[in-house]
Length: 212
Length: 120
Image (cartoon, rainbow over all chains, first blue to last red; front, side, top):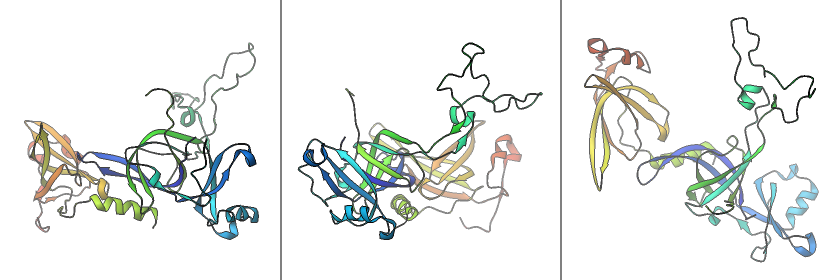
């Protein structure tokens, strides 16, 4: 996996390109993320870098967490994440990862948690059709049949049913970077990303498999 | 800076400052830039504003006119660089924010009274 950056979704707006077309964009404030640990084959069994993001009060971190961050002399930070690399020699402890590693027009993958919808019914969660609301029908928002009778005598695993919906990690792949603001650490990405404004996002260069 | 302030500052860079105050019910002329091959020219479009939507850089107006007995409605992003100008020709007196009722009307009943207390 390639090195990325952590950020916060700020919201959506639109920008105009040079042809005057309106492009829907999501504004993401990302980084700077200091490198908090460099993992090596000798000490950890694999090579990776660990970086942190998100300001937090000192009192809200435990002593072990503060001790870990002290090794890289970074400010108290909330989130830690890791990127596995073949070669970690070009990175130093405490070095900050910023939005400057990206370029305009580059394709990126954005991962985050979707908006939580709580315990949702069949229509919202699985796009089931609704039953008739009137004419004596009592089958308003029910699921219909969940399977056959005596044979097999059970409901098959994986049957779509009501339950918790949303608040799961989703990666939106191949989004275009429309604009970068290195002064304010902003990335403007074409299209939507998961979560509400304020949501934590992980942004990495796109992971293309095979020929495109 | 807070999230909304940052987004507003991004929008402010692209917003036009010389646009007139457009109200629903006004008759406006919109200059639309059109590319024909390599050349670019401005095509005027005239009609009644029947709706306004959104705010900031995404603000748009719906302009209706009846052309050859066919109602035509176009939505303009008024801060778009493709819109060269917006000029108010006449202020209309209306009691609604959306004038969709004009779609059902033709001829005399589709007119709007002029109001004179707003400057053009």
